[in-house]
Length: 512
Image (cartoon, rainbow, N blue to C red; front, side, top):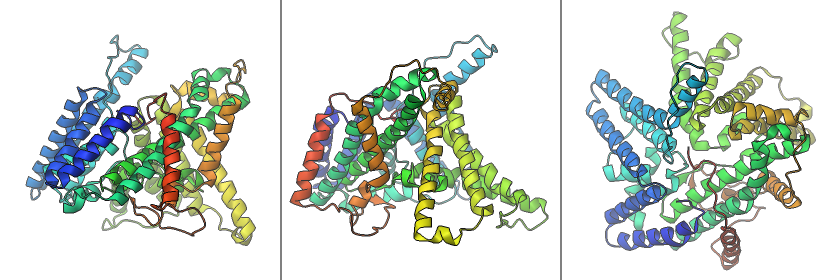
């Protein structure tokens, strides 16, 4: 079931909200169970068989977490239990997401005659698998103290995040499900959550979906594109991806807020970033946090300790990275490894490896510039210098993102290289122009909104709708309030979005 489908908007969501708050007036636990059951219905709507995979994953990981708690005083046993749990989760993920692709690669090399099996990827498998692996690691480290099965069940299956995130952390979410006031109806929560949801819906169906046609045509035969169409295709996809993922993130946060639950912020105007480091602090923020906590930091600490031991010290962790011999193991290795994992997590194929390594390379260059680059001059610190520097930095960051996004969208690495070649003038130019005047107007509008307009959470400043929401800065931009004027405005946005539901499309992150 999709957030942008009529069955969700006019049947599922009203029914779940009504049942949740009616039951909540009598018994909070009954309301939580209703929400959990509804989440499983939501997940099984596309393919009921996948409910068994979700339920099995939850039961398995909760059982492993119980064993980890029982092994708290026995380190060796605890580590074995953790390794078993994480390995099992990764094997399931490997089977559904990567096995067929790897068999195809091996068969293409002539090393096997096996035919790649047809394996349908369960919705949201990467998201709920990573969520639960993080929970197991925290259990092993004694940092997961929430142990109620019902809260854990809802933590993993809660439908607003189940298909495409954000990647939740138990410490933020499970305590919210245990609050006695969770199921108390609040008009403010419903009004605010609805406003965020419909703003996200409008981003999806009015902006992102309007670019699907020419972008799909461009990526289907990139070698035939002229320079203009190649650039429009690449820039158009970067904006389609921006508004598609921003829409899902907004809709997920808005839906959760309708149920008095606050999700972590997952998207914060990333194309306004002045560096790739800042970009990853604004784009898919919960994935960045997850990879930092469970991949980058442990790897960097392990490398630092090994270096200290080889140097004959007492295994203290060196702080300075301002030498090449320190920079490579401390920054380059963990960064490239982490971003390679991020690329593979996004999908099976060489194009996703390239996507991850490109961003890893960007981050390494960014860190190197910060450590070894020149200090800012007085001219750069002036108003004009700062403005021009910011424009240059934002433009360079966006160009780097566009190049990586090409491989994120391409059906193969060769497809991505062909589009890049077209952008450099090496395409045949045989394809007819793909972009109509209407498409170009939408493209310009998307660019203006992405780079110049306030985002949803700046409009909602003063209302803590998301965890980690930036503090309000200034008061010149519009500010949402539960007032008649804003109600009319949001009603118009909602009506316009609903009027564009005639062609329901999947979210880009729908099947990850």
